[in-house]
Image (cartoon, rainbow, N blue to C red; front, top):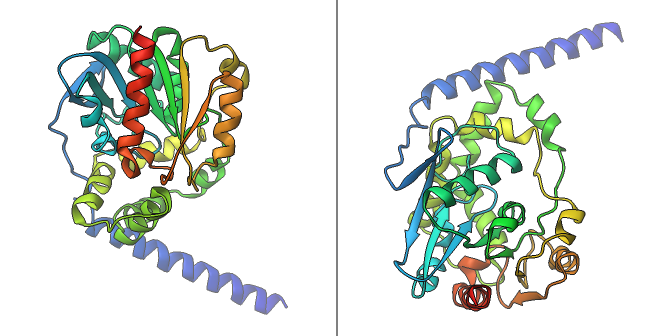
Length: 305
């Protein structure tokens, strides 16, 4: 038994050494991959450059916040519809999209950054729309907003279960896995199909590139490792009950990422209606842009009056 134990131990050691060597070789071969540079609009808040995209030149200001790993591009079908009568700003929450990779990546910090951006852009008290993870930021900004819309996000914390996972994924293995996953068209197509809803389109190279490019911003791999240690943060149920500004919960009726039941629970805590968007999944702003824009537009007009 001791002999077989030693043999097994040596075999495991050999596999670890081979995998580590392969990982180091792969990382060296792909060392220039993460060199994407952002050349769009940005605003500096407390030393951090926040990327944003703007649509529209008049009307009530609306701030759009994406969810986990979502760049401002996720609003590219809904924002132009809102921009007919509103000034619309989609802000990238770091380390997502093209904002500077400068932590900490926490709910408190995201709230400070977005609040600072709103002040720097002179938006006054905008309507804040938060999708998925961004819903918690919208709730945190409620005291300074004209109203908040929670889109496919219950604003509650998921927890810190990823902490052990992040601890185990040390360089060079973590770097290799990160580059393999974030460079895989198959992974992104499968994820988008699951998040879109019942009738996903074909995802061509342009769409895949829009999602993949932000992952190649310098410092993104390290930023995600840092964020994983905290889990997906959110607000407390007590905070939800204390919101007093106009609020609305919108949800894709066919959401398989975050259950509509979670949205109904948050709507009850907020004491506000729950509105389901037919034919849409988690990415409701892409799957049903007309319906989502119409609901947000109606809400913004009521909040303004």
